Image (cartoon, rainbow, N blue to C red):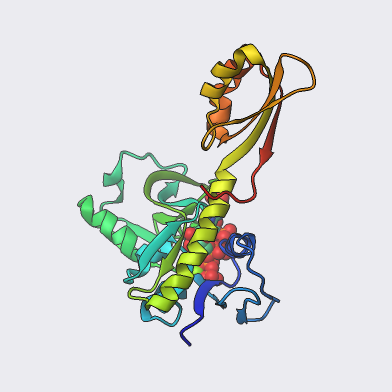
Length: 286
Ligand SMILES: Nc1ncnc2c1ncn2[C@@H]1O[C@H](COP(=O)(O)OP(=O)(O)OP(=O)(O)O)[C@@H](O)[C@H]1O
Ligand SMILES: O=P(O)(O)OC[C@H]1O[C@H](OP(=O)(O)OP(=O)(O)O)[C@H](O)[C@@H]1O
Ligand SMILES: [Mg+2]
């Protein structure tokens, strides 16, 4: 089939909900009832494969799927040849080395000659090699944090986000070795027809992501401060200025990133801005 693309997404887990929400926010409609391992969108030429995340890099590399959404940790670990089209900003986490809380940590030399449990043997192996540490890597596929307490290993290397799993298992994080977030990957060498569909999808994802990172700001300002206020919130091309019913005042509408808004809020207020509204943007095409 040439006029449709296949995307591999995680069936159920830490990536699933955000992957499917992103596709839905792109205006793509599809059915994903539990238990279904394949579905097709009704209003966009895309088919979904619901898989374990471990299998996604391989399926995309082999061309079974044209696109995939997967964590960078899994992608680098599987070491498959695919293109990374976009960082998606969700499922942010890190791979870290951790040891029992009670242990002194003198630095990376701690791990010399030790046994480390992990599901990420390649990433850990590369890291140890680049730090000239000889350690025994013990591969386990899940519940890695339990390993030290049952005598399986002296340290672990696993995913950390809030750190609560480490804490609950009496461990402390000592080295961050890899930072990860979800990425959109594609098969290398897609044909032109498929690339055209991928471009359309990327256009929509960009509009959703740009919308999320920006806010629509409306405020009232005395006309004498307009120049100052425009310089603080310049917007896309320039802000919209509309006269208020009250003489000498205007309403200023602009778009800016949330960070920029907080940076400028004191100066806006000092310049006389009031009645400031900050509104989310659903989609934004620059
Ligand atoms: N606590 C977390 N916070 C943020 N992101 C996470 C967290 N845990 C994992 N991730 C990211 O989400 C990906 C999927 O994690 P998950 O725990 O669902 O994987 P899994 O158990 O291997 O799932 P599967 O059954 O599909 O193999 C990880 O590879 C990582 O990129
Ligand atoms: O630092 P934290 O916020 O505690 O997150 C880290 C934990 O999250 C993931 O497991 P998950 O809860 O997804 O369960 P899983 O092991 O079944 O994949 C990961 O494998 C860690 O164990
Ligand atoms: Mg997995």
